[in-house]
Image 1: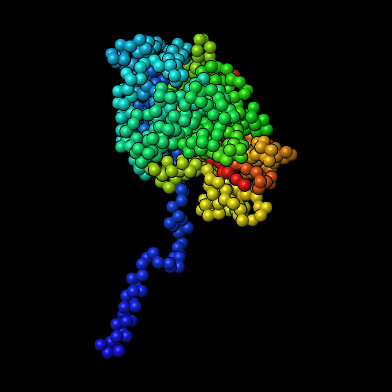
Image 2: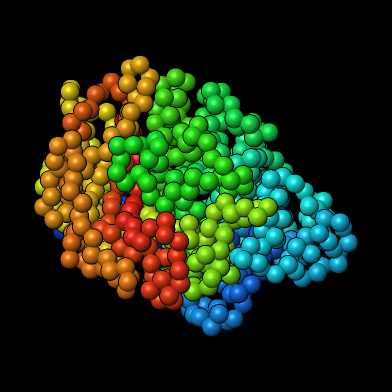
Length: 634
């Protein structure tokens, strides 16, 4: 080969090698006009309910179809959540959501799962026992003044009283669980509607300690073992051990969501032992680590009251008295000493104190809402179907009957129920995996039923103009962290954190009154504090002396149960900088978004059916959202 030929061949080889440069080699970043390309950010908010009961639950199954005329099966729950109309037969009414939900968890009580309906149907093997016979007789008692003695029987089981030998119930539990997980797989439609598998562990040792347990997985894994129940143990730590064993043996994932802390007799955010007695000051790092690991979320609003905070705990918070239940459902008497261990805001503050003392925060949770319905999964004031199938609109039981009565004493009434709440989840897609992952990282928020869109980010470099950008979310992620996360360290000495918050009204709902940021912190002495800041106000209002703000107004006509969006704003947003920031103090921040006043569900009841509602029942309310917090650690 001559020199010219060789040079030509070498040039060709160099060209081939250049063209063959692998795609993973370092190259200048390609320019694109698509702002969100390859970001894989959670740009969609998905609406759902993680807390629906069917006739497989002990209480709903014992009560039976009643006035609704239908058996509330998991299948009916999924169909209703997807937007189908459900005929309530005996009532002559048709129920349908204004808009479908994106996801649903049928979380039936694990205790005697599926047994109650078999008892009611007269299953011979179950009725052959004294407990089964007593249970069956209770199911045959007609409702008197809205009270079902069957519900009292159900409550006894939640208190750990075995009506039946669990071994006798075991095959029925197994069959019911198989049916439940199969229904979830049947209705799970990735990308369109997510049916997540779950159950409720209903421990109630002199107070509610209930948890909803959710799976990331399908029936192939979740169906292997039957749910863990309070009949197995009343101790939350034993539930967490069951969850750990599930993950280790199946490779699946699972989490737990406490609910109704407001009805826990001062136990939910205090450590309890296996007898359910409080060990208020006995939380150690091992317990704290376990609780933080398995319980990343808390359900802070639902039909049986709101658990964000209470006016007893937050006397300077004008919005702290929302849909409160000060009763103890099982005992009827509430004590002031309970409050600090029953509400989420106090728990978040106590978590900071514990982290300062023992190095771990057991109460570092995000916040969601759900219904706890034993009928239809709906949290709409003007479309509220009650908590049970026999709570039909217009009925006397619904307007004046007791929700819980024992020994002739009414502890709570049906009119005290709230039309609440929903879970809002920021995820990349509507699938079990994406929703579960968002819940684990706490990028979620709670609403009392309204579907307002809320974004909340924390960082050190946001500008006021960022709140008015059409790409608020993109800026939020690029410059900081979303709700549920920890603030990174600041590179600027003496800097105070910035919070970017945006809220858009429910497209089919009310305008917004304001956005608030709730701050909790611990000082050097270890004492906890809180403050509510009004950071974005509608209608050009400004805070006055002491930060007080003039009310937004009220357009509600209670006689017709109507309101008008002539006050408030469709959107609110701002960048807020903490004016009292101390870099040496642990703190959390979460956003609370408040709507203008609208009619309560009971006001719609009066306007539509002419029923009489007790005078102490509110005529209006202001729906709201609570985001998961963002935490700062020195």
